Length: 211
Image 1: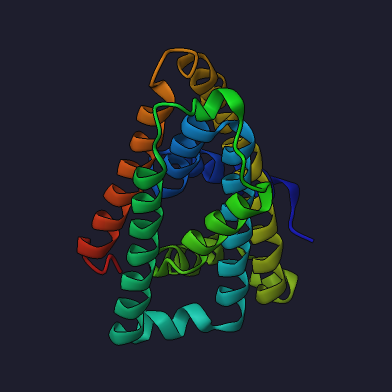
Image 2: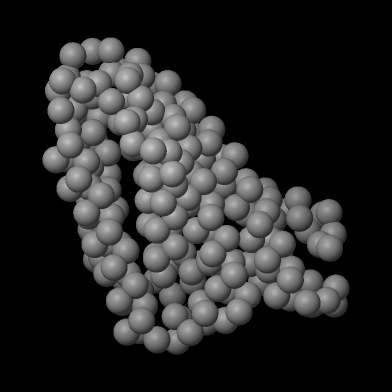
């Protein structure tokens, strides 16, 4: 078990990182505005599960293999960008001035948003490399298995991700619900979400390797 001071320091840094603007919290923000807080919360839980997946990869060495293979890294990066772009196009196509999405609530199952958040996070190789570099800094080899400590840290990171992103989802969902009371706001919120996804796709596809 990790010492309390180490865990608290890890959580403080993790919360600061999670609040910092990035692809995941922008997805939560965009979907919460366009589709309501439960849609955003689904994305939040999916991203958290994706983070824990990267933790397991780091623990068993998969992330190290990605770091060592430029071809694998590029392939995963392009796959992630393509998936985000597809989500963006779907949001733009579904935009309708007759459907105030955030006011009425999403007609899609909550688990569908969870799946979207999970896939978008889990296939992003830059997140895998971040966990590979970040988690070991808080491991204490003298306390035992570094792999087990990595899993514990990853679980703590995933839990605080749900709390932080859930807060963002609630706040943005309330704003989106208020905006959706205006005529045609639902369509513009969908378009905003679509543009966020497409912007994230372009950023991921064109960004450098970032190692």
